[in-house]
Image (cartoon, rainbow, N blue to C red; front, side, top):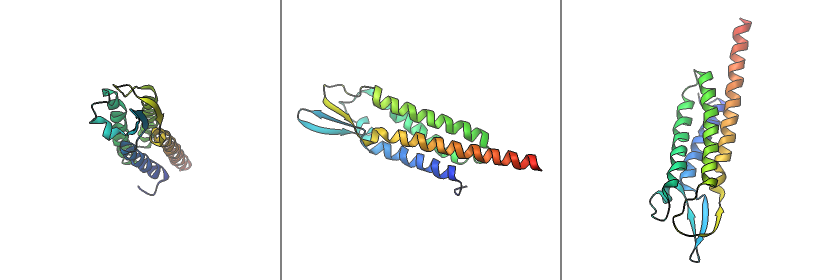
Length: 147
């Protein structure tokens, strides 16, 4: 059911999840050179700790869960609960970006780039999807009550 508003919001969450894999979320200075750190490029780097796996795994779970939620349109109550979980997981991704230390070496001038704030947009879109799922469920219950 692509024509539903919540499906479009969930597709945007999936798209943002894929974008977050490749867009740098941290910029840092090491020995006079600036480097950008993205999830995919950081997994293969020896200078990065294993803490990079946490936001990567949670983001992969967000992508998979959002895709599954799109196809649960017949069970709106479960879909609503899972969308709330999806928004909560996006908040965990935000927290992992800002609270974990990803470096095994000394770096200077660490700054967050646009990619660190993409989970905020994804969480807001998940919230809007939940709002429209709830409105659909209320509309169906009101129609059943009238009959």
